Length: 498
Image (tube, rainbow, N blue to C red):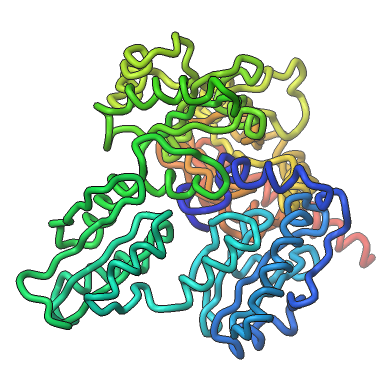
């Protein structure tokens, strides 16, 4: 599975991308493939992705509302490419009927879009979900990473891409170390346009120039390592304060910095509040990102970050890598916002931890953990604890329910072992790397800081093997119980034979 930073599995990313999709009528219809979208099965999948150089595949579940909504623009994108005579193919795969394929490619949630190249996974698609977004992305990713330019064509190139930050590299030849770093950078960044001038009378040192759509003055990039070039471009290639939505969210995440978001109504007071955010951001570039978002469209995101969607305008921040949120409770003035944001950057502001109510009755075989009880249950050093992090809408999680309950019942007499679950959409658990749904982690009694991910078969037998191997406090009782049940089974079989 991909990490939470890079995967559409981040619930936060899913919300920013999916809310607008789900608001349409399509989410209430049955899933329908577009006319120019090829529906694949386990029998046809491998041949199709090998026969076509580039294939973008939507892995979906028929019950998923976001999948139903995405099917419409996905089909429109396929129709556009077909009309243009493009060799790029779009296809979809029902994971309910073709689970083996979805398991092979570690599909963590729905919908998941993956671009295949010559039969192999090439890129996870994490861009906007409109037809235009899909088409533009595919054209960028299936062509050369940088457009070859003559020196006298650069100005026209910049005018054609005046709505996006553009990077132009000037090189004497393609053998230089900087040229190789430039190519690697162009391949890795999706939110910029790259052009290159090689030879054509270029004199002097090789150089890379960033042309910002929001600022007249270009910037020369002096870094020589791709990773450093990426950091420079992402740090300077966007406005200090920019809108965050389904199209732009990924590039905020890619920066690796905390994100402070002003949720505001898009009315006459919008700019007044954004101006305060702009002033607060001036001294914090490179430490924390600032953004604004439509409160009417993304109010659910504010709630998820610990804020109150009834109190607008409102600010909240999130750290994607640490899975922490920071609602702002001060006045909407630049000085107070800057102090709060600086505290998030240096760690002095403590995160808000969301938690569902503690259950009054927790006597079922599978114990329920919420944010407030995670430490006392999962991190109890006297017990081994197996924890499933799930989402209520996740199809794989629903399939696991009877298996997980059977497992918990089987080991119900082993007091040193706890089989538990956490609704990860309702509870914050810092410092736990949830890579998809379900994520299953085992917290052994002797090492709570290094949980062991469960990656075996999701069967009772698979879990038994895993626990008997990794258990610490409960190990003796688990092995004893397994032997006892095995002996009982053999005894019963012998009696049945008589």
